[in-house]
Image (cartoon, rainbow, N blue to C red; front, side, top):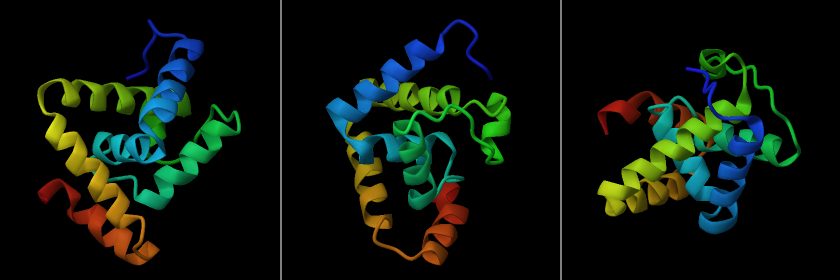
Length: 120
């Protein structure tokens, strides 16, 4: 799954542009959707914070699919969200609203929702 044709600078620019133009909840929603619910809001938020601090390596289970490359994983999710938005802007709005609603839940509730996400 590693994106060999994109450099870390390309990936960082794509992610940062999404953060700047669309906001943190957009990127968090992209990570939840891209992982089919594996990432909870709190987990994705922590990864966004790590990205902001300059981290490029991630050791969560899903990141192993990207050779533990945080930028590659996040870039893939943001670009998926952008593709979804091309054909269904309303779906992206719902995904962001879902992320915002789950942000208020306890960790346990977020994990329960995460398990159900593929069926929602």
